[in-house]
Image (tube, rainbow, N blue to C red; front, side):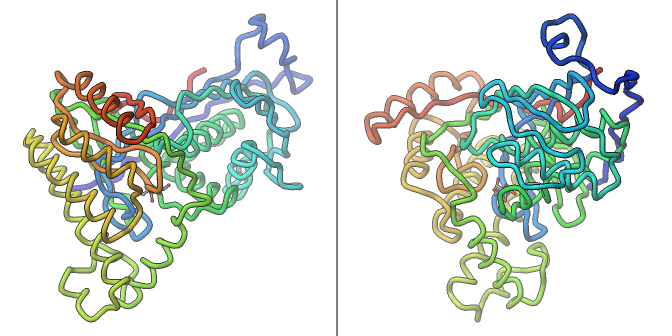
Length: 388
Ligand code: GLA
């Protein structure tokens, strides 16, 4: 059975000095230790793409790459500095005031969502360091949101359950950049466990752990075509699916069966067929992993990619090519990762052959597309946490 994990992020008391702040320069120079550090990982989704926003099933894992937010001092405003992107525009601790631009808008949106849940309006200065490549389909923005949210909560001694925090960050994504994403990325970020994927019902948020077999390597191969959900057809797909669900008389894709698609207009039938069949594949994939049947898991990945390409129409030729090359090089199967329209594919390969398959795919991809095809092996890893 799926179950709801009720771990809470305890924030404890962060002592505020009499003046309310500590000189950031002294902290950065190492003279004063940081107040706290929040860690929020990126994710891979093993299977279950474009199912989350219709209350469907997903099977993600948090990965070893992520965002570290180091809080140096409490302050009157929230001032964040990214090691890669430089200082972000400061904003009010409750996320109010004029909207800031650039990457800091994610932080402002998170602060506004947390204020709505009752977080005391305490500001801070923090450094942000990310090892998640942007646009590769590894949820760099969810990691940023969750990292900032954890830091803001911990600094204000404000407690939220992990999934409540994830939901706040999901709403922040919509508020910041207008992307109506589902809960997949933020939930994976807070629920991750080492060597474990999370089977999550996105309607009830019930979940259970599915061990990743040691002999299975999760190879992420980047097409080099940067994906931006803001400008992709993501919102359009969501609208099309919601329309199809209305025709089927429900809001939850797990309540639809394939025979119900008969009689729908062709577009609605295709969109819904992907989601209904994908929900089934998620359960079958989890069972295959539990039986350590990588051949069957790979077959399901390929079926998933075909469905995403033909029925949901979120693939691009570069992703199709990577899937083809990965399978030709010996992967059990592969599918596009995340929202599609660019980014990466996830290939399931034998651990012992991961390096050989990665370099084989990269050289063939370069020959065929003129692009690099960089890859990394994702390790299912622990979820978000705070350290003092
Ligand atoms: C993006 C979104 C997720 C999910 C995936 C597709 O990553 O942020 O909510 O919809 O696409 O599965």
